[in-house]
Length: 268
Image 1: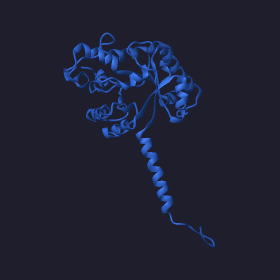
Image 2: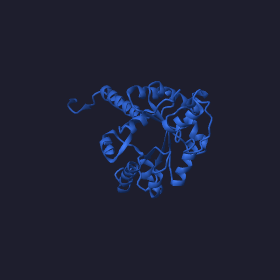
Image 3: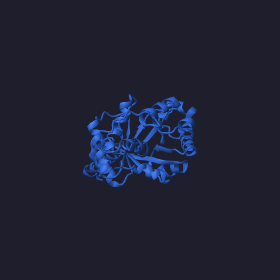
Image 4: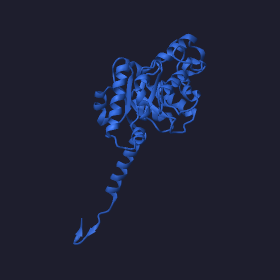
């Protein structure tokens, strides 16, 4: 018996670029819809959202039904906050605000099995096929087919970026422009020189150490990000799409139902 192979890791290891879409809505149907369209990875969030574990589980089932991967951004907390998504059979986790080498080492220790780390072992959950996966194969395949991404979204870890990228057990460094812009005192200034330099450096260091660079940004900049070395790019979100769609509809509706206004000498 084998653990489901990661679509993301398969494509990245083959040198391909991975597409990702963020789902904020708290229902697995949203993730299933996105997966049906062909995205490689769906990203859901527990750092900023209060989705309980049953909701997370529904997102995971939905994506697996369409052979898509799912990445859960975890809240910073205990090891249980990190491993529960993996035990529910999420394909990967995104750990926000990695602040340095020691922080990264602790994440690896908590999320990877021997010999990479000391993740707490159960095996009775979905990722271990409810004990139907051989114990030693469970440990090996989990280390091989599940990814750990560290979010670089502060200036502090840049000093130790090389050492962080060199760590065994870290698959991906994810540059987060939003919080980084705030941390440098330039919120929302996406072309600020320090932000541009940091984004480029994350990609360069990943390439140097054989890790995968990830980021988020508009689809219009995808070619630019790929040229930098980014292989995993999140290019949209459900709340943005639905908001834009609704604004467009209601603006057109109001325009087409607003009566002509009288002017001097007649009507427009």
